Length: 418
Length: 120
Image (cartoon, rainbow over all chains, first blue to last red; front, side, top):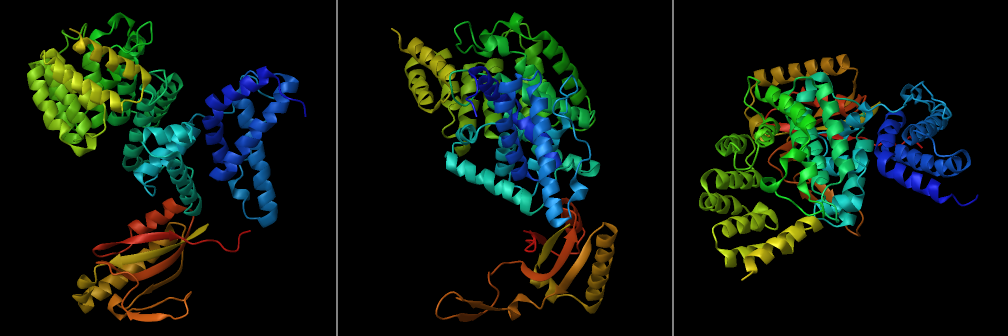
């Protein structure tokens, strides 16, 4: 076998990063087993090396890989069924010719959402649900997931392996839940998709603030979920929240790649199409009879920001009131923190500092760099520079993202100037 | 199809207070459960009620030179194992569906997949 050309190498690497998870999701549906599916996907990538070198890189690499991986899965099932003659029920009759890779995409986007529901099965622990979804549906490398959850890579790898083993041994099915079970299963799925979005919106490490592909994939999953459950306020709320948050992407870093806070962002750069769509979804979600859920409320908060011409002209009392409601349905330390930041805007930095200190007493927030960073910012506004500097130094010890780190360093320099 | 062992845990204090009528109602509920499993495409392969955990005897140390015999269940818990079913069902979702409709008083059901030792 000859060495693949650099172009083929690059195409394979690119496809691996972009397409692996989607190829896996479709192959799992055919294989009915995660390990077999992963093996088939791996083999498809190996086949691609030689085939793409000889025939050129196909226009739709994902479809090519999916077709080959599915065919390998079918071969596997046939071998297994000849050996045991008990599996033919699982076999999906349709086989697509790998040469036929025109416009017809043999990738069904629903496959990913189906796999999300499998990964978020209530028979799996919440930590396992998140880890499996990020690994298998989102295709994040185990090392990155470990970093997000502040555990070692081997611990995370073991958690993922245990989860896959349970899916296989306990026969957690690769199907959409029954309509009557959807509601009960939804919350875990919403949580995981939002976490995935957040992981992309502020990458946990590295020198770029946003991992664009992760954000796009999370929004895609959100869209599929609203299509699956039309009019569901929380599914709509989550999609609205992601759209409204992502609408600010162009203004979150400046030309030098440095972080720009919401108050100082150039709002003319905000994505108006995303805002229009997000606001419509958010209003739909908030207009329901039942009490608004956490995603609808967070979307409503993002909506107030998105509709405001500037930070000072933002309806901060409305935001504080939405945070009050959010704290009732979702009483987490992070919500309390954000509420404190809103109070600072509505009632001044002194009131904000008081609310912040209340919220920050939670042990869950220990090690969270946002706490000292927020406190530093309020102290700076109150002219208490020495205390602010100390808090910026604390925050710098905890922060992982390089863009955020440089921002904190600039602020520290400002308050230590004479 | 896969097999699952349903381990039924309940509060033994409640069972001690049961009247003959309660017992009959409980037996009736288990009959109905059997009907639901069949209707749901599953099969009950075995199932028994157990005498109270206070009658249990535990034998340990099989891989050591000397075994010990002690009074009581393997693990002391508030809810104790009171009965079991061996059930065949399509997948875990179907099994959970059956576990949801099991008549259990003040306790729960542990659903354990059975390993298919005949598969290669």
